[in-house]
Length: 204
Image 1 (cartoon, rainbow, N blue to C red):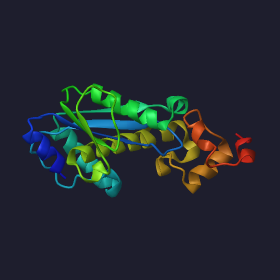
Image 2: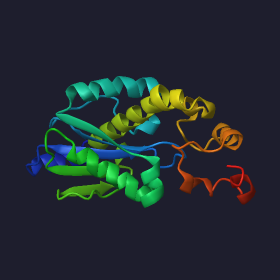
Image 3: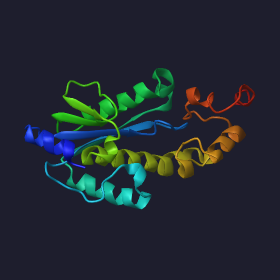
């Protein structure tokens, strides 16, 4: 999990920021990105792709990452913007905001399968959240941040949809609740045409 980091440390980079996003495939809510700078040489046992970890383990590692990191930030781009500029551009925008919000400037970015529109040297790594500790740390911070929004904010605001259960993804429950209640203002309208017939969409 440190092969990329070790090579860059040897080149003299000292503030590597891992960058990742979560919520790209959701029907509801913001896409959330995180940027995390860990101290050179630090190993945090258990850090891995957030999707491979239990919620309890992610929460534990989230606390460790925030305690041990040099700097971290999380950024959100809302559903209205996603509909306007498309999800790929919204995810990249969230990543850009997260990087620019770091209290300690980064000197190199390690990004999970994306490019960030900032003037910094960077490397896009396919499945980076499973091969780079720095990216994996960012994936955990992004995932926990978004899951807490689902449970502590959006579920309370929109209780009819079961957001705390499915986190906004296109599960059977979520699709059923959408048909019953129609989309809320936080649903991504541009995503719904792929899941519902024209007849069903006319009910919204």
